Image (cartoon, rainbow, N blue to C red; front, side, top):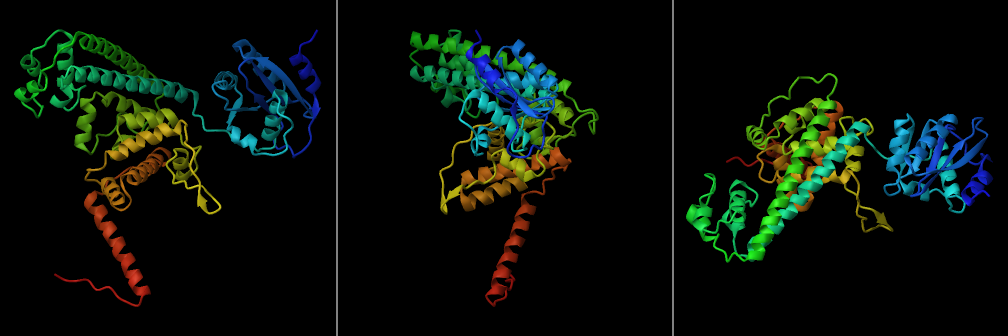
Length: 462
């Protein structure tokens, strides 16, 4: 006896096509689920629609792809439902089909759908797709997606290592061993040497202070005064275990770094302008990259994209890695820089209803990772003697620090877009040149205002 799913499939198959004019007939729609996927596609003669259901296993997904190919389907639309879309998307894309990942809000806003069931949902998606009413979300190429997975997982490990550092600091605080007061960074050279000595059994504050690095601002005596604790056994044990976990996470991070470099080597551009990235104009930035051991990754990112984004002030290797892993080197999907900035969620957005501002809903998308990286880069420009640094301070003076970070991050996004999309190089005019240009613009505005009021500005000679 046929089951309910088979009966529904047979009852709903070969339904006639009616309604809005069909712009593209060779398309399909998929309603995703945790156990079964419902698929709707036009028949071979394009006179009606076929509806079928497939399981969520890989074998069933391949059978779905064959079912679509038999009906000469070229493009498939599916909702971005949880994580259920990932496996069908990758299998269908691997079979040569164009896959559109559609925001569920696009489907909900179009009126005229039938009662909501799985078979009618896939029909509705196919109908809207055939009428050209659906727009796919941005998704980079498969190689970039693989790189993106590695970079995101590495970021999770970096955050986890920070958690273990905080736990170790808590154990030290409970023993009144003030390592964070003795040195600026607990994970620096001196801080980690002191932590390992304590975990190894050293309790003499004077001996612990001898691990002081020559670049520390405090003397050995000042450091030793902060390292006298009561050394309770349970806190020492927690410190030892936290240090082991921290070291284990650091080992995994190194493994991810090596795999990322390997992936970048496979994604090199066909004809980069130069075999190696040009030297950085900012010598301090070049020294910092070399000190952190990031020069190899900088060169790999350059060979992948064909441009060196680290030439932009405040944009480091980590920021370039995030941008290229989320978007890839090809930004042709964004015809203008305003569209790119909007997708990165760095465009000013003030939704209104009835001439009153409406509370914004928190966005949570892949592009927010790029926005967070650019905000961190913008924050580092507070004391920079560059044009971008002057721009940050000018906005901060007028509107506050938060808006200055947002505005500067937006400017960095436009510079990244121009460099990746058009190859427009970044040239720093310097803080003095920016201030002089700003002064000239201000004088011009004051002169125009005075002229409107019937006055004329006269410069005061010293």
